[in-house]
Image 1 (tube, rainbow, N blue to C red):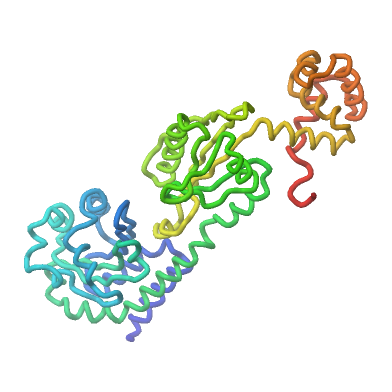
Image 2: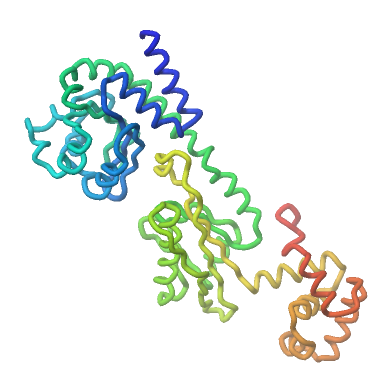
Length: 383
């Protein structure tokens, strides 16, 4: 290749280390080909297309996404062999593109009359189509044969750089690190991908789902969360959809934390869904990345964990620890006695021992000490 071609290859492979530079790669490649601008696109059989573009109209791109993702050109590229540069109009009837709304609303405003494109194998998923495309004006179309020759020489480099960028997505998006953190949490937590399917559940969440007491999992195009009571499942799904829409940039509204009834009669679960930041490179959305974090607060589990922590820290007996937690949470002596099924006198005896062992002299001081403890001092590394 010529020196200017070598410089372009440096730009192309530089995008591996900096995926945000792909628009610049497309712009520089467009200049090399005599094109108006370029794009990488993946059009799924169903759902929202993914596109990165260089020097093309954002407004026209939005119109393309909303109304014309399957158009005469994308349909024609279905039959194009992967890795072969083609003039897309050569795959359709002569002049057919000018009779379409896609041409009127997307191409004509940008003075695009033809394009040189190549389909990329890793973008042809599940009946979809995708690859690189570079848009030509009437002037550029006059030298389309030269543009095709130049593009064909770049096909292996562009394809290889994109594939490596995609492989790095598993390392760069933070999902693995987040997954490790969730595995250490004593409370139930899950990760959902862009389709709302469960990609990770920590041990506490797996145990809760297996019990079916408040939450369960159902297979519907993947493993999805459902409420134990069918009447509450719709509300749960709506809350998760709202968070997913925010994560995907398609919404701004978030639902309130959701209370789910437990058939066992235990205190209701509180479910909180949290949108996660988008990936740095749009095509990493094709990977099974986490887009929503679901945290589940189980009041009964938290109480048990706190009692264990108090017992371990201050050397209390199990009975003393239960009294300490309930008194520290604001219950009175008679209320604690009624809840535990013991006499008020026994509560006073246990409470006296709690004060002595914790080094305090009042219920307020006891509550302050207990509130400073983690929920489970034993942690995941100690049996």
